[in-house]
Amino acid sequence: MPMLFGGTAPAALKRMAGWGKGYIARAVPASMAASWFDAARRAWGEAGRHGKPYLVGTAYFALGSSDKGRANVYDHYSGLGTKVAQLTSRALADSATAVRDVVNRYGDLGIDELLISAATDDPDEVERLTEVLQ
Image: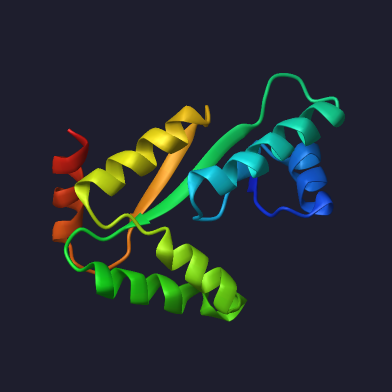
């Protein structure tokens, strides 16, 4: 079964390179994830793996209610501490321009996939995202 591994500790990267299909980064700004993807690529090579790891970025968006979206993301990550919860909730894309920027910045990193998730339970968010990305 193909597995993606996350984490930034050397042991996590070693597990990814040894047993995984690739690496998945936590929802942070692309500029921060860039070094994590670089570390995953290095670990892959150091493990003697051929090719390259499958790289996945993650992001949140809220185009209807950004305040609710930020609060939901903050709450979700609060168990990891205030710093992580603040960083992740602040990275939320809350406008058409911000969504496009996130997609473009992650695309510039040469990753294979971007998982972009709605941060609210509003089913109209999917339609809003589709309109933005057309």
